[in-house]
Each structure stands twice: as C-alpha cells, then as structure tokens.
Length: 161
Ligand code: NI
Image (cartoon, rainbow, N blue to C red; front, side, top):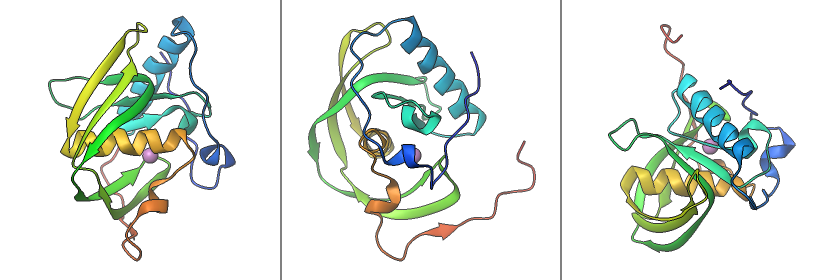
C-alpha cells in the first residue's frame, strides 16, 4: 500500500467527471487500499479517487466505528429522504469547514472490492459522507453547496503529526 498525494482546491482535476469502473480488478483494489491508507494518514472520514488524481468512480469512507472502512466502486444514490444541517470539511480544503444541508437518510448501491453489488442504507454522518464523496465523482465540491457565508478557516492544532 502507498500514501497518495492529495489534490487540493484549485487543481483542475477536482472539477472533472469521473468514469465508471468496468471491472473491479487488482488495480482497483490497490487504489482502494491506497485511498484508505491516505484517508487514515490525514484523519479524513472519506476520500474520492479524483482527490488522488484518478478519474474513476471509486470512494472510501471510514467513520472510525465498528463498520471499518467502506470501499465503494460506482456508488449511486437511489433514494434520499429528509434533511440535516451539517458542518462539513474536505481533505482537498485543509482546515476549512462550512455548513450545508444534506439528506438525512439515503439508500445507495455500489460494487464492493470484489465487484459484488451491495446496497447501503445510511443516515446522519454516513449519509453525509457518501453524498460528499459521490459529489466529488461529478466534480462537485462542498463549497458549491454550502450555506453562503458559513465557510470558516480553523487553525490546525500544534500536536498534529
Ligand atoms: Ni471531499
């Protein structure tokens, strides 16, 4: 596994649309593993392939709970219900946060790392994270959807590694 370089705001690749993955092969599994490692290194809860310079519909999410990291290929939202006001950040926007409205619950489908179709029911933070990462696959960034005037810069703490 390897840490990949995270593309930051201003990098054109973040605005491009990602392509569907046709076959979940070892190369995709390696990408998924690298993305998980990269997300963990920077303490993120999610990462999308365009953020590491790859225009493929691949995302990873980890809420650091019992469910472990989720590795999703070609994720798609099937249903969305309700709304929640959330605070959101993004590894491509270090130390920046904004408020926005996201669905409260979603049903999504995707392929897992073995190419098997799975369905995910998610709410709260997990629903938010899946929506955020799928947006990346369409070149949409969280600042596009934020409630105007809520973007904040938070000084990083000293003891970060
Ligand atoms: Ni992001």
